[in-house]
Length: 284
Image (cartoon, one colour):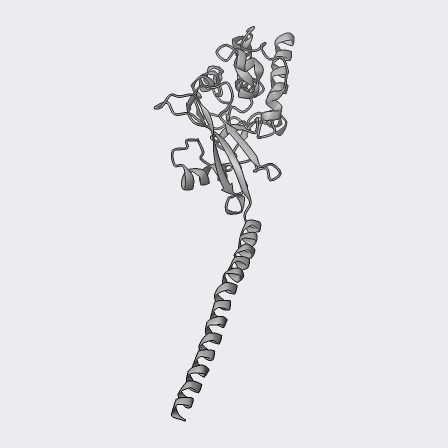
């Protein structure tokens, strides 16, 4: 009887162990499938939460003077600000600290971040990232000497601006010594559309005439500022200013293509101001 009890206990233990192993094996087999399904759901949810975009950025380093190239950077737009400058700052801070570009105010006031974005000149801080396209191409201002990456040499541009003497010039002292020279609202309104220029060079570097004659043609920006002082009734050197720019190349290389008006991030029209100077040359 003792033997039969022992055999019965062993059989019972064997059946319990077999059922336990079978259920455990089922759990081992079934659990990976459950985890894989959950992982697929998480991946799909994560993919829906990201919005990846490729930025092709012009790269050239004078310390390693190989051919310039476009380098791709992928950014999740849901973790980036809405402007192109936000994307460039994110690339520099998180992906490639060697990327070089100018920027300062981020408010469209300083003009530092002027560059060519998808074939159009503009300020990176005012240009929104296009959501409809998968790529955005960023290059330096066209037809300018590149110092590094997106930084161009502005020396010639500033020298041309300096040449038009952009300051008030008078032959007589102010009516009231030590006081400002008053101006009527009507005369002040004549300066609208000119004084707002921030010298970003978007207009000049979009002008084919400036591409062909950058050393001799003053360009839209400099001529706009020249007209700003020509039109200012407080200035007493109008005749001399007109004579200084009455030149075949300085002024008359403008063919009224008006790329300058389309490129200006402040909505100004340098072509109109150049036309006004030409009219004064004929009537003056």
